[in-house]
Structure formats: structure tokens, C-alpha cells
Image 1 (cartoon, rainbow, N blue to C red):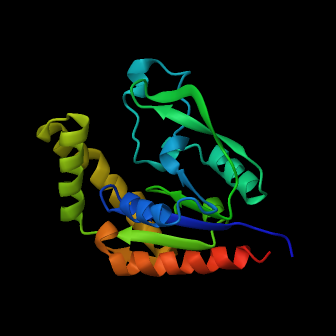
Image 2 (cartoon, helix red, strand yellow):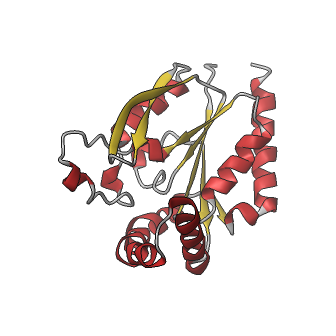
Length: 211
């Protein structure tokens, strides 16, 4: 039987806590055969567009992502081949010249707001998770993050949420919940769900050690 990594997809809206869930799982197994791929690294290259056009990018829309490249890289990792992961530079709204070499592992966690939106991606996953958090908590977390960490004003965060983030969530992200094998309420604060996933991955890793 051919050796094959286990691919876990973790989706959820902005501020849902999906990154906290992912990092909690990853940190538990740090040093083991596990790697994390963030969908945010795979925004499309926009170097061919004027800077003014790049400023209009809707980062919450499925078309913002280069899923073709992400799928190509994921397939390589599944075949135990290394990849060169792109790096996105938000200051210029396009890819930088840098890449990150990623070595294949036995467990791959793919995390991002829309990783369950593309059927081709879903077909490569063994376990699909959706982190489901109430909208009021998501906006509060986004407000706190963007104001403290990104130096944005309250007004600009609210305007973006109302005009872009919320409608994109309702149209594209929320519907992908139906594809999830497991729905995790309350994100990183759901320690029971995280412990269950840790136990599942531990079992997978133990099985892999015997191959």
C-alpha cells in the first residue's frame, strides 16, 4: 500500500478562531511529522496590475486565490515532494520575490477562510473542519486585531466589515459549512474539540510510524 499523508482542511470566517484552532493543534505536534499550509500565502500574483488596481483587491472573494497553484503544491506534498511556497506582500498587494521551501510531512493542515469552497481542494482532504463562531464575536475579534495589530481606525474596520467581509462571508464562506466533517463552535476556546482532533492526529501519526 502506497504511503500517503493525511490532509486536514480547516475553514471558517474571519475572526472565527480557525487560526487559533490550527495553531493549537500544530503546536501540540511541533517537532513531529506535521506541517501547516496557510491559504493566505496563495493570493494571486498581481504584479501585472497598476498599484491603484491592486488596492481594490477583495481578499475575501474566492477569485482572489490562486487555487491552481495551491492544488499543484498540495498534490506534490501528498506525493512526498517538496514545494516552494509563495510569499504574499500586503504592502504592495502582490507576491514578493521570496519563496519558502516546504518539506513533505505525514500530516498536512490546510487553513484558510475558503479552503472548503473549491471542490478540487476538498477532494484532496481526508478530514474537513469548519470553525463556526457567532458574527458578533467575529466582528469584535476583527476590530480588536485590526486596531491593535494593524493600526487601523474603528471606522475603517467597520466599513470594510459591512461592505466586504460580511457579504463575502454570507455568500461564500458560510455555505461551505455543509462540506465539513466536523463543525467546531467557538474556535480556539473549544478545548474539547481541539483535544479530540489532537487525539485523532496522534492516532494517525502512530499508525504512520509503523509504515
